[in-house]
Length: 143
Image (tube, rainbow, N blue to C red; front, side, top):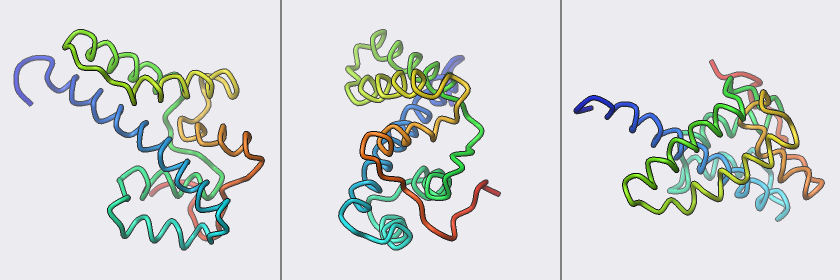
């Protein structure tokens, strides 16, 4: 990746993007659900479109299953988001979306605890709208 420390920066960047995608995917799925769409069909349509992402194709399935079991905690997500925001300050890069997502994860940790799965962040939206994002045929764990 380059000089010493470059890989750490890339790791933080990729995790920052995954948390942003995770929150965005939850919002997109909720919009589909509340709009009366079949969530399995909506998931497939998103996966086949420009709106897809690795997070949608993997963690989105765990959300629709209801397990949220991705093996990464809220505390770890907040740690990496903190590192990303620190790099942003250090390098003079405003990270508006990362800051918003960090605050969302702070709310998630308050609601569900630091050891809760990071994908459970979508549960905040489910709780707020009294609407679950569930569909048949999605795995409880990724293989």
